[in-house]
Amino acid sequence: GRFSTRLDGHEAELVYRQRAGRMVIDHTGVPEAIRGRGVAAALVKAALDHARAAGLRVVPQCSYSAAYLQRHPEYADLVDA
Image 1 (cartoon, helix red, strand yellow):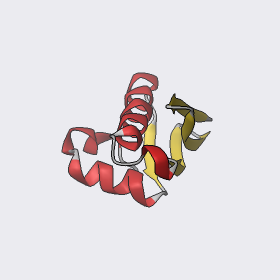
Image 2 (tube, rainbow, N blue to C red):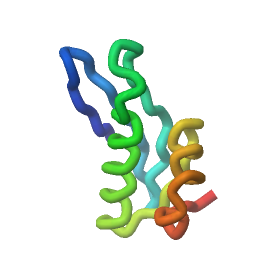
Image 3 (tube, rainbow, N blue to C red):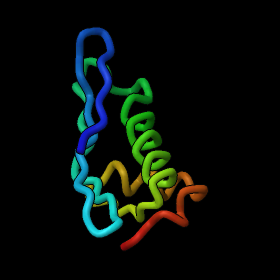
């Protein structure tokens, strides 16, 4: 699966796999031109909110999603190492 957004003509994405009740976040990518504007955070938040609504556990394989989860303990209940 994929979450994406476009900003100023650039596309950012979060790529995940869903299997056995788990959302495995594989990659979060934001082009240099739009970095530093909270785009990656918004994508991870959208993915986590989706996981919560769907009753999925989350496995943060990419470093950005893992760091986001450390900074946002309100999502700790979703993490499935």
